Length: 257
Image (cartoon, rainbow, N blue to C red; front, side, top):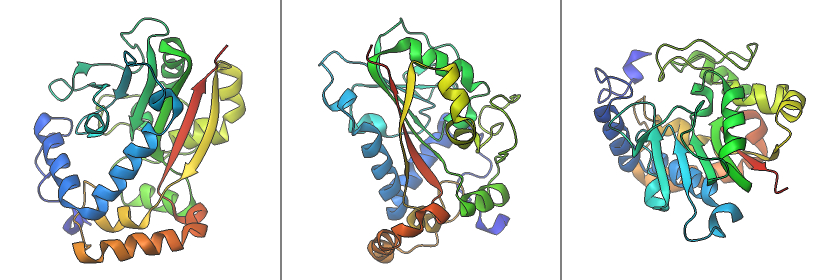
């Protein structure tokens, strides 16, 4: 369905500073999409590890790209595998930070791009302070999410695979089912291999505003004046989130011991 593709990003190199700049502009210009990102960022930061952190606390966002999280909390250190887009160039599998030096790690649509999440989770446990937070917004695996992401998204959704995959393009080589694989299908393996980390929460998130906004890759079909009604309708249909939600929030905690 190329006619639905967002023309402003066609021809841009995924992962380039210009690509991320245009994505930021799309998020700001689309009220429904801005609502989603605002909700996601506030959800990531709503945790005692952040709100109760000391003044010298350090928070790291991975895969920042065009993220606006730092505007919500200037203590956030942004990072990406692509140079020129963030404060630091960082590979999630080898975090350049001392042991127990970060109070929180934030990822928005990034976990499923990490080609070896076992390595990342070990690194997360190493660099987080006791009681530190690993917070993620990720692709959900509801029936509609499975249908949508496997058919109408350029990245693959492969729930039958394991925790690793080969990668030559950090933007496109991914597995959007990865958070479901690790934190639902293989939850016992996660607990066994990473006993210092605990999954505290899985929360399905609003889906209708995001779907109609076009995200950052497709055209927006939602006129601004109807956005409040769409948000209200989504809230009224929250009982259907287990069937339709496209994203979920994951809260993982490092043991305080």
